[in-house]
Image 1 (cartoon, rainbow, N blue to C red):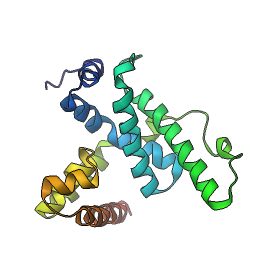
Image 2 (cartoon, rainbow, N blue to C red):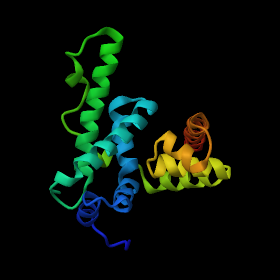
Image 3 (cartoon, one colour):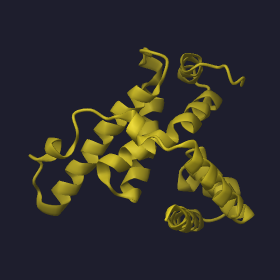
Length: 184
């Protein structure tokens, strides 16, 4: 797809069933959505889950979306905020069965600009990923970049579900550790 393809064009194509167009949107916005979720939840595992849930909801709702503006990100940020609120409610329900304080923990607005990672960090992540084994790079590409679930990635790579889950967890831990060390 040419670099000049707009979000509106990709949304229209994805709404018509184009998985390729949706993957392009995912690649463009997975990082900002993750950082929005992480900013709200303060937990990497929950942020990863909410990022995936945000894109699942987006895929289902794309056929009825009327894009306002040039970017899909504000709409995705809204979905992410609602998914995060649901996760906070579930945490509270599981912990102490109280749900009345949820809205106090979420900001009224999300500053997308404050949540988006910089190009420098993206380059450092790419450099770290390049050092992974072939299998780990494929697992990272399928799950973290393209948004496949563990089972779909396992089937594509002809390995077990647990292999994908465990290796992806180790990859994420390694990336967090190496990127944090390089910042110090």
